Structures are given as C-alpha cells and as structure tokens.
Image (cartoon, rainbow, N blue to C red; front, side, top):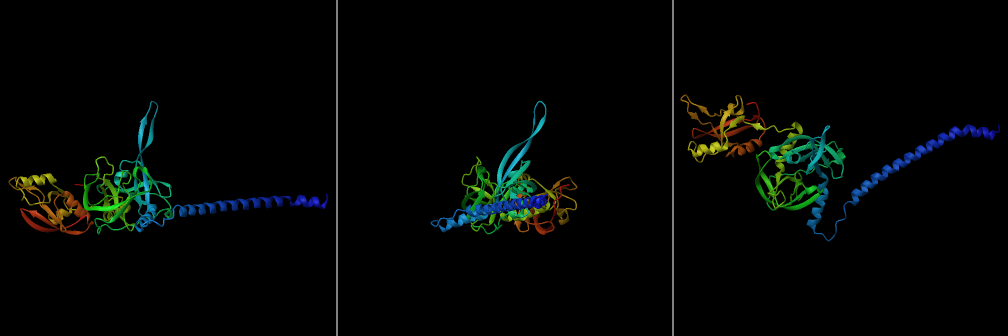
Length: 391
C-alpha cells in the first residue's frame, strides 16, 4: 500500500474527532452568543421602554413621570380563581373559574406581597404578575379581615423583586399630593393622581369592625385598584387603597386608603405568625346597645360612656386588675359591672374604641384604666395578655 494511502487511513479518526470538537465549539459559541444577545436585548428593552421625557413638560409633570417609573416595578397584579364541582351524568369534575383581580405591592425581597383581604377573600387560588410580566403562583401567609389586610408570598428570585419604599402616615396633611398605582378593571399599571381630601375618616371592614384614621383622597380608585399603594410626592408608601365611597362601587370622587402606620404594625406579625397577636383584657363586654339602654333607664349617669364588663375570665388580665363583672347581691339584685371609660389616656365610648386602644399596644404592656364603679370613677392598672378564646 502506498505511503500516502496509509497516512490517509491512519488520520481519518483523528480528523473525525477534530471535526466533532469544532462543531461542539461552534455550538457553544452560538449558545453563548444567543445568551449574550438575550441579556443585551433585555437591557435594551428596559432602557428603551422609558421614552425620553419631553423638554417642554413642567417640573411637576416630569417628577410625576419619574415617580411612576421608580415605583411601578414594586406594584403587582393579583388574579384569583375559585374551584367548584360540576357534576354531569357520568362524573364530577373540579372546575377552576376566574374570581376577580386586584392590586398588591412587594413588601420585601423574600417575596411577600401586601394586598387587601377582600381581594383574596373568596379565592381558592391566586397568581401574582410582576411588572416584568412574569406570573407566579401565590400562597396565603396571613390575613387580618378587621383591617382589610392580607399577605401573600411568591417564590420569585430576589433580583426580580423591588420592595416598595415605606413611609409614614402620622404627619400627613390635607392638600398634599398623592399618587395611586393599580390595575383598575384589569388594566395593568395605571396611575392616578390627586390630593389628600381628608384625614381621620372611618370605614367599615369586611368583618363589620371599623377601620379608623383612614385617608380620604380624590385620586381615582376604581375596582381593581384595591390593595394598591397610595404614594406621597416622594414615592413613599403612605396607605393601601381599600375602598371607594359609592353605592355602584365605581369611583365617584371619594376614595379611601388604610394608613401605612397601621400596615407597618401588622404586616411583620402576619409574616412571622400568620396572625395578629391581639393584646386583650380577656373579658366579655356588654353590648353597646344594652349599655345605652341602661343610660336611658337611668341606671347609669347620662354622661357615662364606655364598655361595661359583663364577665371576666378567671386569671385573665381584667380579673387580675380587679375589674368587677355584672353579678347578683345576696338579695338577688343585679349589680352592674365596671364601666371602662378610658384606657391609657384614650377615651372609650364603645367596643370599637376599646379595640382601637388595645391595638395600639402589645402583649405584656401595662396600661392604666379609668372605670366607673357604683357611679364613682376609680383608677386601675392592667397587664395586657394574649387574647384567649376559651371562655
């Protein structure tokens, strides 16, 4: 055999191996190129999604646009669904049907999402759509119906999550500018602006309990905005949009938002425990209308206002503080219980007042009480306990 043929036959496997390596290298280069192109395209889309701000806009308009771009990545769209059994002639099938939608916002990089309780109240399933249009299945972490508050959690990477900037609501002023971002009628990332129209308002929650110190605004808040953030002119969260004052549930000039100071107090507890550790005196109060009847029957002074102790839990905070419940004397006559008129300098006129006063404290706090006993005022001190539902 000629030397050239021997050489050709000997080099053939090596050449095949070389060709395979070249193809692998080429494929690797193509993959790296595609990944680089995707990253570049994503950054390009992000950078070009913001149309340059026109030079002829006012400073106020420019600032509003900037605030929207800064804050909208923190706002999410929540969609809910419920399951129902549909039976036919042969089987029963579990059907999932859309239930509603609302808004929420990112609380932290762990994936916690804050929204209204009524947004997820009747839902069996919820999904969260981030500003980058990725969709994540959410689980319920905790909720507080009395404040129309709920916390969800998604397992999204932290780099996709931009927590909202949390502000304060104690020093708000009527007339200051506010912005609301939400998803009214399912329209993603909508912005409305307005002013604070009023402070210290009171609305009724899903449980029938009042929510006090609510912010009133003329910024349009329509169905779907619920659970979204109300921001001040620096882009800080000052409230959670929760309700519109309209019999048709369509915006009619007045919207409400739960103040952020209340949200900041309860959200960490919901994240940690799944519920709120409500401080309590552990007693049962007389219904407000019965207390009013006692006044009309002149069994209480006309100027007396408060919550009357009907019975106390043995070993409870009220019992240990010396509060006296309604009881009978040796002759079988009814002796009225103590009327709690004040808790830690906060006047108590009804059961809601007492709940609000307790919510300002935590378990273990010692609080001064002023009670009316036998038509005489007296001072007591109670150490608040965790609420117990075993009485």
